[in-house]
Image 1 (cartoon, one colour):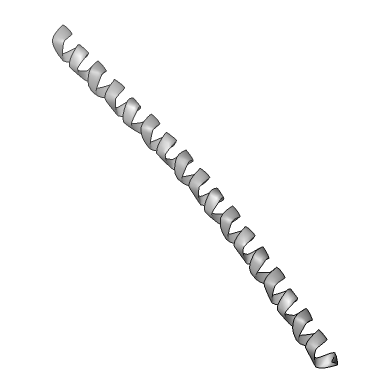
Image 2 (image 1 turned 90 degrees about the horizontal axis):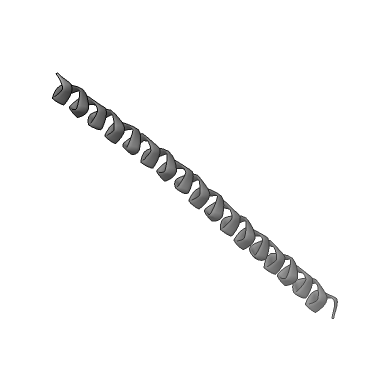
Length: 64
């Protein structure tokens, strides 16, 4: 029947869309994870700079 064919095509199209949506979602999640990793690297770099500053500050204090 023609109706059966149409609904099967519609179902297939919906399945394709949900498949694409899942892929988009996964890619977005991976991109966010990569951004978060960059942010934590930056935070780590900032923390180590702060540690360097406090070490040099205490070194200066000892010299004085």
